[in-house]
Image (cartoon, rainbow, N blue to C red; front, side, top):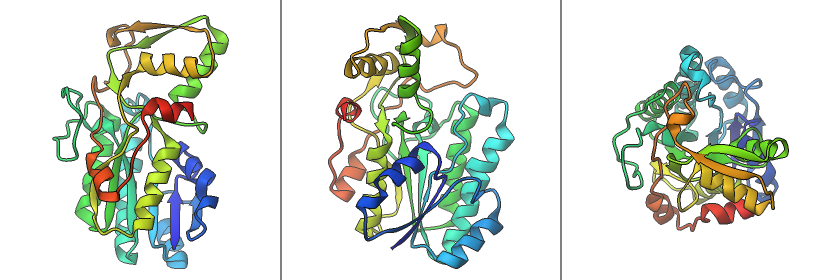
Amino acid sequence: MIVVVVGANGQLGQALRHIAADYAEIQFHFYTSNEIDITKPDLIELVWSQLKPDFCINAAAYTAVDKAETEPEKAQQINVDGARNLAEVCQRFHTTLLHISTDFVFDGSKKTPYVETDMTNPQSVYGTTKRDGELAIIKTMKAYFIIRTSWLYSQFGNNFMKTMLRLAQERSSVSIVEDQIGTPTHAIDLAKMLLTIIQSKSKDYGMYHFSNQGSTSWSGFAKKIFEWNHISTNVLPIPTSQYPTPAKRPAYSVLDTSKIKKTFHVSIHHWDIALEQ
């Protein structure tokens, strides 16, 4: 089974590399965003004509949420045009596409976990381009799995957990937002889920939500990071109003994972168990 991973130097791409050796039946081909620029269809076509992959995991994305507010064209090129380019080539070569999306497609006005069929209403350029990327794939092909995830962190790349560990070395206290609620998701758990989907050879295509279980605030997440690492840095919870950012974040973006658990017969770690591991 031939699986191409694009965006291989990102957080999820590195998580997939980390566990690839455990999947002997899969022949992985990892491409960084420099090696396959998904905004250039000819480059995708060239690789696909050589490899004829069975699956593609699109881990390439413009994820600088605040920067996207001043670089909307760049976010559009990667998150929308790039997703469409991949979908068009995958459609021609009969490649199943696994595409990663985000909780930021929702506006955060709900008080219960979001299901796949809930109305999207992104509040930022990043969220809008990710939503439009989803729509581009849905219009272009049938054999796709779009997996929305949330608050991704790991030992790889740049993420909230690593930022907290760095700040803890510099400060005795940190002020962290307490009124944004979501679910931290370990990138390794997401990577394993993607490979479970591939191994299943399922034809249950469509939209799925995947995150670790439970929910917390950013300040609750920070406290748990310090607790597991035996760090005494104090967390000072603050409202979003005291930490203004260029991009608006959803106040509540917990994802309901019932569909993916039922379809693929998986159990998913609670977020603080995943963090401890």
